[in-house]
Image (tube, rainbow, N blue to C red; front, side, top):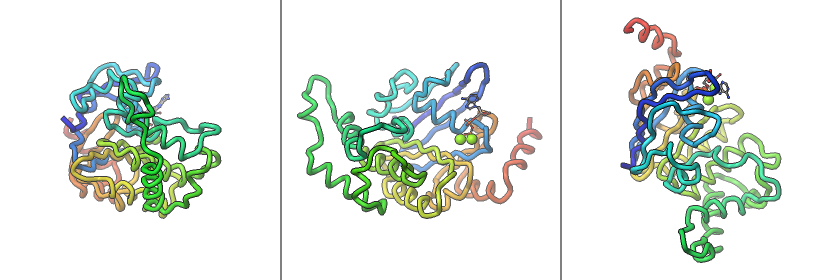
Length: 258
Ligand code: ADP
Ligand code: MG
Ligand code: MG
């Protein structure tokens, strides 16, 4: 199925158990937000979906398009259509933004037994895509000639991530948005990119600590993570309720029910 289905996922780093039975389904065609207090395991979940080697998955499965992602290498996950911004190097000396984006696209287009020259994106088509993306993100074309993450501001890194997403056209995007360092302009531009791409053929999992981002990216579903588990699921109104009342009421409610 083209839903991302996480089943009973347990994970640890060193001897610290962080995820303690995560169950979550992100349906194709929806924008799904995960909210939760700091330290609840949200970033850990996104790192595990990306295949970060520091985290040990002790049990559980992550199904996408008939594959358990946990059995695939990060680049195979990417070629299945899963986009994770931080899968990519933070700084690569001597590689321009344009070259980086072009190789990412070509890695997706490569086919076994075929000459990479045959499957590579034609130069004119790439330039057109790149220009469209830059325009949409309100970025100057000179950005494409800069070296990767060489002195990029937080907002520029964010824009690059979104640009990358727009060029790769994933079917499932996982975005871990700390909100930190993003001014309102950057937030709005990032949200425009996500909103522009979201649609019936795409799923988006947006992870955030603050409700603020969700004023710009409207989720269909909101899940709350606490202490390494999803403890509540609701509609967009749940995000507003959490913004207004914080997380303690939910913690108390859960403790009362236990
Ligand atoms: P969130 O994104 O919800 O704020 P994280 O996934 O970043 O939560 O962290 C969950 C818990 O795991 C926290 O208690 C954090 O301190 C711990 N943790 C995360 N990464 C590491 C690490 N590399 N080493 C040790 N503990 C970690
Ligand atoms: Mg955190
Ligand atoms: Mg986090």
